[in-house]
Amino acid sequence: MRNRTAKHSGARPTRGVARIALLALLAGLAAAGCRTAPRARTAAGVQDALTIGEGFLAQEEYDVAKVLYEDVLKSTPNDGMARLGLARAALGLGRFQDALHELNLAENGRAMDAAALQSVQIIRGRTYIRMGKPPVIVWAYLYPIWRKGDIAVKSCLDAEIKALARLVPPETEGARAVMGFVPPPRPAPPPLPHVARDEPAPLPAGQFSILPRARWNPSFPARVKQMLPMHKPFRLTVHHSAHDDVDSAETLAGTARLIRGMQESHIRDRDWADLAYHYVIDPRGRVWEGRSIKYQGAHAGNESLNRGNIGIVLMGDFEAAPPTPAAVANLIALIAHLRRTHGIPPNQIYGHQDLNPTKCPGRHLEAVVKKLRAGNG
Ligand SMILES: [Zn+2]
Image (cartoon, rainbow, N blue to C red; front, side, top):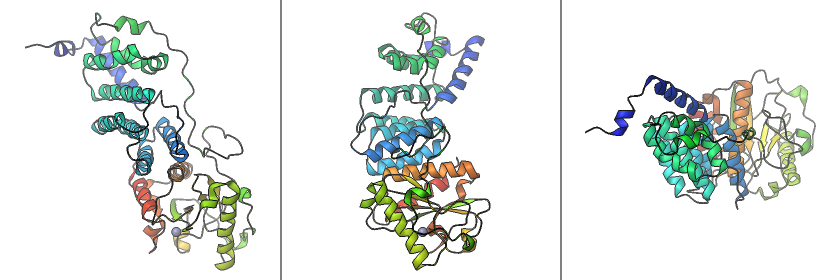
């Protein structure tokens, strides 16, 4: 018995070319979201994390996006937008079955509105194309979504629906209609990951925003003569501050006070030259400059371990409780920024306990560090 699918997948030469073009197109579009504008959510930190995840997907940094969304799911289980993010990351990585699995979970996930559910369908259609499903099958799935969709959905699907229209039999319902659609100009892509709030001003695209040292108003000047130059950073180490109360870190002034307290104890009690760490991340996810990156840190245990080693501390104690999604998302963004800037490979990402017998950075944060180290991005 013959079926239409087999008959038409015999592809005339022009259709073969169109099909290859379709796949090439989709390789670039794979994880694009179109309808993922952040909505008002109760948990502000989760919204920040999702926005940062969006930036990673736009930059095709799928491995780190995956770690980020998995972390969001730890604090808000079954969050639909985080599941959708995981699906888009899986599609970008070419893991189609994982993508379909996450899309099914997203559909039944929490906090999904009509636009988010449409995004699920769009990403599922793209997954079918990337899997090489026959064009008539993909058409039967995507065309009704395009037909019922508003102008944003039609625009989002424009490239692939037109490519499909050239592959299906010409008499197919809708094939002519989609060719007549003219999409409005595309909106600008989402900005690169950055700290979402309390910044002096937005930075040009491509720059990671870090609150400068002056913003925490150091109690002591750094003892420059006592420090070694950093040379080229080739690894980085994540710590927790072991603060058991970081409630006052909610405000900029309160966080500045806590960072000053850390510097005071490092200089006065331990006779170090400055704050031990190069970067501090507070529970709201703000990233602060610590010791200047021009100088070697004092965080990893001894001079040889500190050589070329960037020290990052998250405020809090993460042996008992996990860090906030905003703090983790910005840690992931900071690490991605430092890796790009200094060419640091994933296997040079450490938790303090990987270098020394200590509970730092706590088991919850160490789990995130391990995932980042395992990444091949
Ligand atoms: Zn440590």
